[in-house]
Image 1: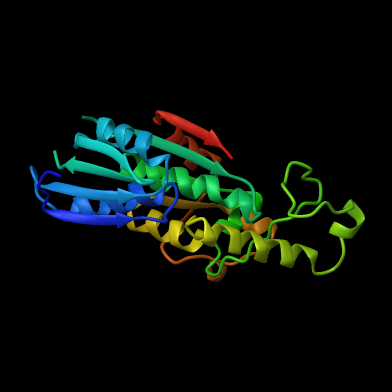
Image 2 (image 1 turned 135 degrees about the horizontal axis):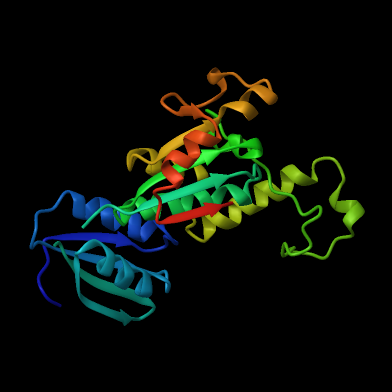
Amino acid sequence: MADFDQELDASGLNCPLPILRAKKALGGMSAGQVLHIIATDPGAVKDFEAFAKQTGNELTESHEDGGKFYFLMKKG
Amino acid sequence: MAEKKLAIIATKGSFDWAYPPFILASTAAALGYEVQIFCTFYGLQLLRKKMDMKVTSIGNPGMPMPVPMPVLMQALPGMQSMMTMMMKQKMKSKGVASLEELRELCIEAEVKLIACQMTVDLFDFSSDDFLDGIEYGGAATFFEFAGESDICLFI
């Protein structure tokens, strides 16, 4: 797993909370920093892709492991 | 990148129908949209200081029931409160945000909430019934923002 600056555990949360929490976390970070997000909502996979596309942040990693979804979001 | 705009008209005042406006508004705001929700008729319930909306299966055959139940039984006193309680529990267990939480997130994200003045008067509400800091306006107020919006939804 690559390095990250901050972690957000959104496990157990459903749409749209993982996105909203991620947005909030990114708000407190500076450009270039990386947020590691953990989620259990399967919808989050597509949603984080769409979020990145529309907000100028970069989704550098997205993978599933044992029913959990892991994302790396680089702040744009 | 010019800011996109989302205009929503919220007209429903039941617990389940309060979700779409708040979910879409908070998410759009997180995506960088400027958002307004114009609340009219029963949608004014979304603006009450203390939200107390209920869900009902009456006239709503699409609502999944934990056990099959004749419609007349669904109409018995207390059933609506019970269904609302069960729905809230189910949502909590599935990690779905509460309406209060979503509304708070909307307010934090500067979603503009507007109460339709005509229906406020129609139902004898006063501004004390509603959240502080909301705006009041009519159809023309709505079109001022909606006319420039990229997405406009009637819910």
